[in-house]
Image (cartoon, rainbow, N blue to C red; front, side, top):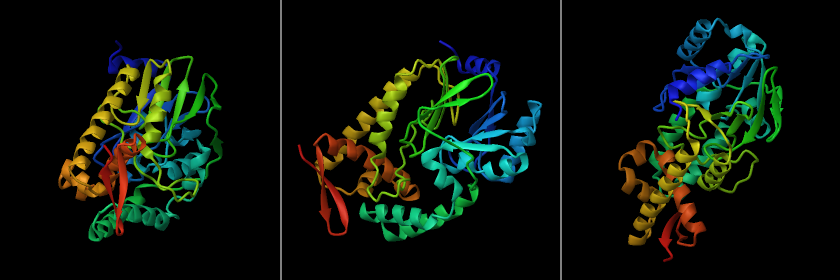
Length: 333
């Protein structure tokens, strides 16, 4: 089997260079990829910070390139560690910006819908039992994080299934929502290389975060169910090398995806066991599973719990039991 180092070397030989850019988040550095082609293409940018910009420029310089030479910036999804420097890069280089069509309004109006995003998240947290004081504190933290992102005009909206044509390669655009509503993969069938961003990461399970729907719908997304369906589609690709948004390349994606399916099955069973003991809110389940992390990372753990409860509800094993202003879940079997 190809090792991660061999996979990186093969990617370099194919003109794809990994740039590891610092972030302020627990996930650590984010992988951006410089594609030596025409146009000279940068896939993702890192967060909007002076440190990230300095390191991006330094790593480009080590490859004999400069920020001003970038001709195309491709965004894989809407998270701030992946798009934060897009405005600076585009303004300095004159680069075109490409992103999947469903995320274009989000990118072009980044930050303008903060109140809508905050209201959506706050309503979800309160409905599922998270105390109001925790919700207020998390809204303050969320607002501060927005500074790590940026808006930009998207000059090349991409459609799911179309080909992004460069001089020496054609990359198929594949919308694979789940981790975010806008997760986009770029598949090079000729070389068997898949740029997969945060859709699949070797060392951690990608958390399907519940995000305000990009289409304006008020219905809560079933993010984990959507994500698992996206993984099933990715599993069918004859990919040899996956280049993720964090960590090392993946060289056996089918085994890793099967591992993730098993992980989510185990988590769902554990949550079913807790609900079978007595009806619980999603917040109570998160506290049982992760203790104080359910407070400090309340929205992330809420997304995790609701994703697995959705699987149980879909299987007819759990149902919602409204209790005043909150929702509890109770076992059916």
